[in-house]
Amino acid sequence: VQLQASGGGLVQTGGSLRLSCAASISAFNTIRLMEWYRQTPGGQREFVASIRSGAETVLTDSVKGRFTISKDNAKNTAYLQMNSLKPEDTAVYYCHVVTRANQYWGQGTLVTVSS
Image (cartoon, rainbow, N blue to C red; front, top):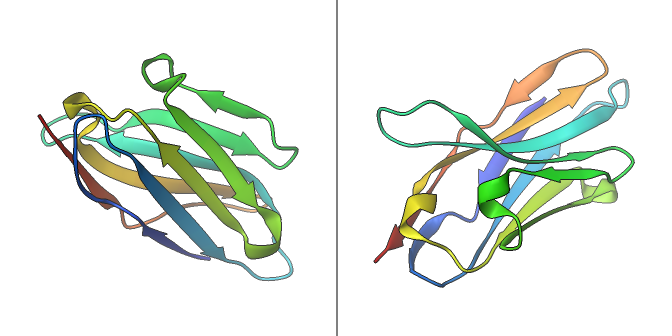
């Protein structure tokens, strides 16, 4: 399985970005969970949001009301819509996918929010 994350960039405080995570997956695997994590320089990777195969979503408290996670099953793609961005949202965002057989990490996409 290959994951292609995209959509990061530089944005001002209060701005918006939409991250995408496209998974190439064989017919023998089924995606159970798609997640976004983020990591700052010198910091630990932290959970941001998840969406299950049944579309149940979970968001970490610090992004509730600002971020939305969604997915397009036909495209095996998850999206993270980020609104009202703050400087503390600056990080490398990673996509994480759990299938029936394994789990995979994407390469990360950098989000920088300027004050």
